[in-house]
Image 1 (cartoon, rainbow, N blue to C red):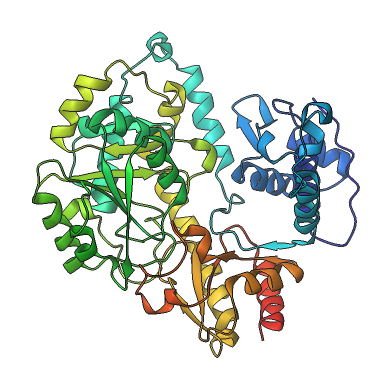
Image 2: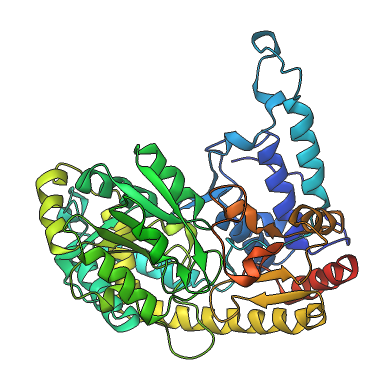
Length: 483
């Protein structure tokens, strides 16, 4: 176990100082992959702070992927070698320097910029401060105490049937998804499920909205798929533009499009389903991203609920609703693709530990997940409302959208006399990180975007992982510099 030489001061929150120290030591390469961190109890005792303070720091590191939690063993450094300074890891005698770009200088500049950031409005991070650690530990302990010998065998490739039945019941009541347990495939993250899907359906021409989940785009490109970029209007994907392409697969997020926050209306959903029904080979991948968090009205039903033609491949995850490190996602296959899955993919083993499946099954089945989700909804609703309250002073300069659901909002400048780069740089100079919309675009330019607010300079502001004090302070700084 490593020793952390942390010196605390009164300049910022104690948990932020612990978090920043460990993060920076990992980035510098001083804390290496696989090294074990001190327990929260021992570090709290060493620093003379509360254990909750250390828990909050570790939770933030956990949610951002710098560390991982191993049951009954503690916290360990993850493999983040790609962000370690090049100068620390490359032998200069074997490297030909680029005369145009000095990577060490770029990394140093980036590290210096990171030091300035005090408030990060990340749309990806979540709040881990209320995670039911005691409950999770109790379930884990009980599972291991009562474990049968068959629990340590390979198990069903699609996931344990008991967990799949529990997920099927949850999806029926929470998202209106019509499926049976045998249609569900459990995997370690959406990335794995997309790779598995490629084995099932083979080569495809996939349509994606111009603003989308970039990682999914990279995965499709790695398959050799042709990606057709489709425009976005006020109702999300343009079906008219889709019809003009040779696409036979669509990747969409109808209930809460990421990152725009657009909810696809029923008329557009029916158009999309009609497009899929026109050919036997056409399917729609519905990524039900952060659908659990909606703050006004009833939850928006899934597209799969409306699908009478068995054309929707539904994908969901517990990473946002429970914790990123859970790494459990699920895919609901139409029956025709289910047959193909058994024909082509029965040789693949499940990528989720049966112990983890048993823990998650009990967590959901016995009502702990529902109680945790309700608590998180209340917490995020409070932060969501606080953020909108703080943004009221911005309304003369920005239109605010995407505020009914999810974990971020969209700010679009009312005038085009400022760029996204200027907005993000000014924010960074003030110690605040916001995210330009162009980071989520599949191509330069805006010719495919006709949604009125998205055609203007736009930034994304997330709030889930921030404290109330940070939200207030961050908005004050932005309001001051975005004149």
